[in-house]
Image (tube, rainbow, N blue to C red; front, side, top):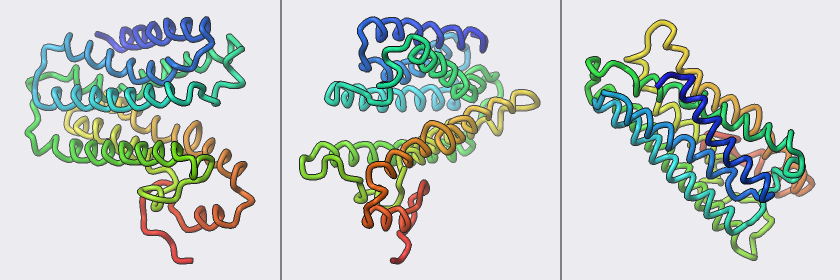
Length: 257
């Protein structure tokens, strides 16, 4: 499979579910399609590649495991909350709603670049397990962090006594966005073995983790949630204290009051 094939399949998957979502005017399939795209594309890349070295097994397994975890969580969440308010100003506009799905399809393709590079790398350049271990540890740490963060946040928001409040307990006591930090670790961990495989122009495959990091830091991740939090709780002294004392991304001990 070429990179153009990967992009075409990503566009096809997201295009089909966009049509279904637009006709049904539902948010049920939006996030699950994101995860599904990674799972399907990675499975196809692995199935069509003749290489089965440990690095290929790690890369395919890591992406699919991440996709199953995130997709399962997001699908379970949307079945309970019913509506994703991010799309309130887009759902009734073919152009706005369609633009989101288009950008999602392209984002999947970009984020998958290092996985594509590794899964299509010559199997004769097999890496020792010691070269894969740092990336695997980084991936495991990131997956564990975002899994715990998501579970704690969902439980917090589900309790009647804390519904509508900001969260400052669990891992959220040490970071205002621990799930995003975990997400970054996941993709850098998956890409890390590429240090030993990519040469010349193929070093551009590292655009993948750079892209997701910049996206979460400056575009659709932290900035949007910080603005929403300021709108909801910005006038409250306890929130301002939490914001002042708590790291915005990397979990760190809280600053002294």
